[in-house]
Image (cartoon, rainbow, N blue to C red; front, top):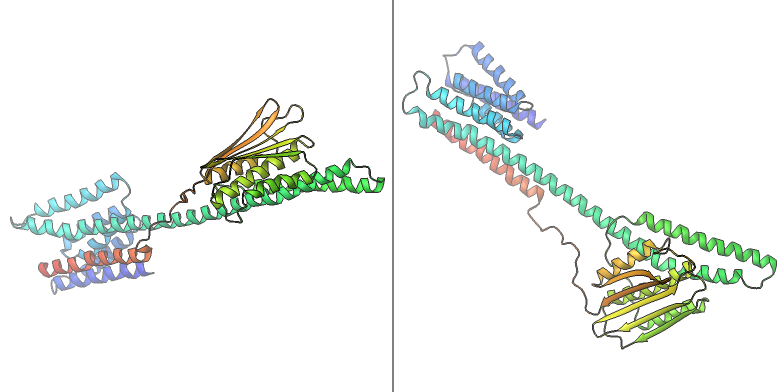
Length: 398
């Protein structure tokens, strides 16, 4: 609706200027025809801007009054420029109008500077203003898409943090339950209790399977290290003792003196040992597991090794999410984690630095004037070009 009202104002203003310029000399039908032509050009400027500008140039040459229509169609043509063909059409129409009016009978030698100034103010400047407004609109749309993608990235980051924490904490507890239930299955129990134990072990294994399915559904992007409690160095030995109590054959060796470690490194070290023991419980039950921790002045080296039953694959089935999460945790802490199978033994290794890392999260977009303020500036500049400068020219033409 505002665009329709502005177009109507352009037609009324042009008709008033034509009536004032040809007062008493132009019949009523000529003014009506002029108004109809101006209205047609204002309507055509929306769908065929270059052609509407060409028509406005012709109408201005004939009537010496269609300056508002020139402003309207030139601004629309600049806003719609999208190809070299359109730009060539607009430039050709403006140049042809200038040459035709300069070569018209009755045009004196001093008419050329006046015509050049007229085309600059009523054609070139509105075209540039329309082009600027179109680029501004595209910039605002790009910024809005960037804001949406930023919010989506933060949402995916949070989903990954939840997925990794669920895998590391709940998966660890369910692994202990599965180990204990498996131990009860082979114990000398009465028949009714043995059946109940088999159901318990099956439920624990199904819960682990469902947990890994949930983690796989949640994973969808690149995570960062999540906040949470940071276990100290003694927690590693306690973790090994916890699995040993559950029935696993776990040996724990420690070398060196723990240096001061940042919370992120302590958390990552704990998860490495936890993941190695949980994988051994799931994929190599009953096999011995060796945990080794070496404290260096500037790093901590961790290794969890266990023999695999039979012809085991290169990576434990179903453990991909946890191993990938360990690699992500180690990278977030500035170190690395990998795994390999050598001579029938699965070995998980990690190196984590003692120095805290710099935060590598992407920086927030720089603060700027904002879309609302930028729009106001664009409209103010457009008003300056479309109103102030043409008004000064109209005073000179009168």
